[in-house]
Image 1 (tube, rainbow, N blue to C red):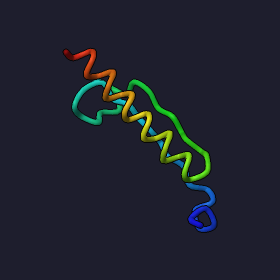
Image 2: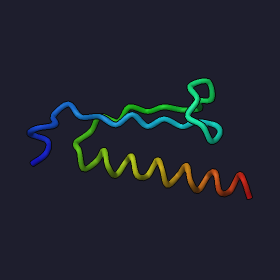
Image 3: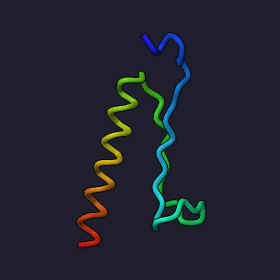
Image 4: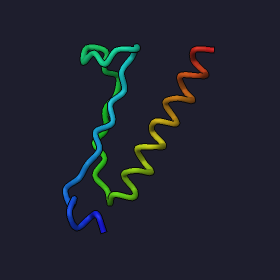
Length: 59
């Protein structure tokens, strides 16, 4: 029951345009505040969607 110890846990998902994590190149950001299992699923889906979008754009 991790939510008992991490009741205020949140994920900050940030997207950068480029290869370096430069704040000036930040494209998008989301703060995900859900139960821990949902945070992981939503965070993972953001990464997968970004990877698929970048693959389509760069091909």
